Length: 149
Length: 149
DNA sequence: CAAAATTAAATGTAATTACATTAAATACAA
DNA sequence: TTGTATTTAATGTAATTACATTTAATTTTG
Image (cartoon, rainbow over the protein chains, first blue to last red):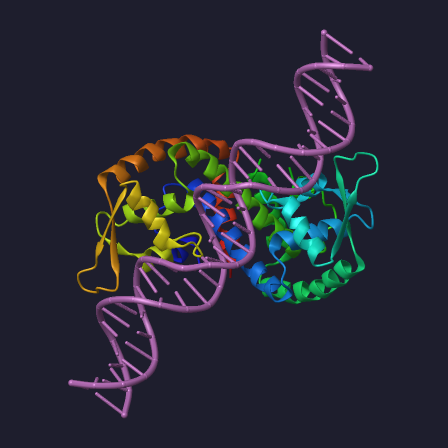
């Protein structure tokens, strides 16, 4: 379904205006799907994002600031996000040895195990997009990157 | 800047995974830009969205449910969004004559005037995307539509 | 070195959002 | 018709988010 019928709007003033609305709408739509996927695991999208960033460190700790720089939604309150992850015993927080203002955050084995479970779920779910060819996906990624400049 | 360097991540498991992240990230990025644009007018994106939907009605009233169906972010609390717009005297809320459960919402001349001001601001801002060709934009819109199925 | 400026994270708060529930009106079915 | 179900919007609430402020540590400057 095209964005016009999706929003029951026929008259975008320009292709630019349409693309802007389309990007925001499709992003919201996709985020919603992800949220639904994560809901059974009591995990928000932002929490999931932080966990995956930490996994990418392969055991190395990261400061809160470094985490924020890699987050998809950088307006999130990373400090309290990490709180939640600590509460759930998925990550460890400890004072950074070389800068006592900073805090080192580390993913725990429990966190890694949860992510592995979720890898499965995600891999299944990604099949939902098998109607897109590899060329389509590459082109879409290019255009989105180009759109942001 | 590509999504990899934007998120400082080099290893997406697949082009699908990358596209999913890219769509969400670009949507957030775009929404953030819009919010900044609207901030001086004390208007949230959702409020702006509702106002524009109402303008599209050309004077005809709309129920809250009909508004929700056309919103970009359908999880918004439309009832309280309309509250805010009524507070600011941009729209009028009145009992729907043929269905007393429903509420008719109408944009006021003050709301229309605000939108006209914002049309100017938006038109200026859209120039920011002049690096995208018309073909690029058309293709992007097609791919996003296709992505959602 | 000491004072001032900057940085990193946490926290207080007001506003917003999500989710469930409620209230009122309408539609439907026996 | 009358009771039940459904629909529409509003509301209560708990959680989340945005934004500013605070606290503590580090860096810079005179």
